[in-house]
Length: 233
Image (tube, rainbow, N blue to C red; front, side, top):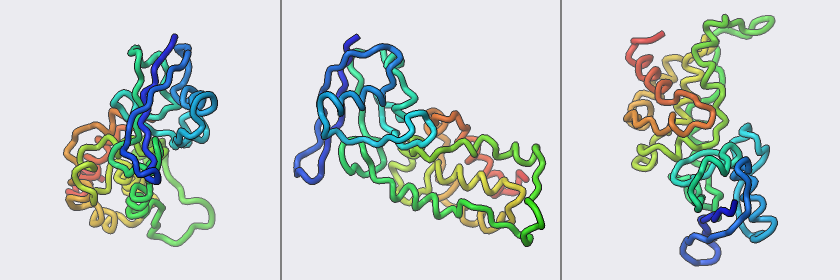
């Protein structure tokens, strides 16, 4: 079936305003949107810029907005879009570097702010730091996060408040806040207790809706709030 791909184009170096360019492509229902982008670049327009790496939903590098919904182009198939035209845009809430490529520096800076590593209280044991299956289960879903940026791009609060940590950073903070091996509970709660932290979330649930790994991001942020209030261990 022939599909029309309406793709956002923007090159800051050109001095021109952003515009949409259409490409026609013969597709089959099982084609990945990423496959289609690659074919457009190989066969029609070698200047089209977008990110990709593994192509299998592991690296998180190919996040874009497809027909108004953020996600990974390698996970979405042509059959997911019955419309004749498929519109592809860069992730919102980020500055565009070129075409579908966005600047993720602030995204990763927020990630660094939450200290995404264990801060143990006790000195290193002779072997590993032990943890029961029940203790690990508390943050097991959060480990699936691949930092693709889809949740932050879809978040209405991120669009309003540039100082808001964003759902991806908060999810990573949740992962360590609920890790039994970490000893920095008070430091982490203080860091997250504010309008630019956990309380900035207004439970729109857009982050959870678009997460390609089906992580309950909103629920995790709610648990951070409960932990700050002393209502959850």
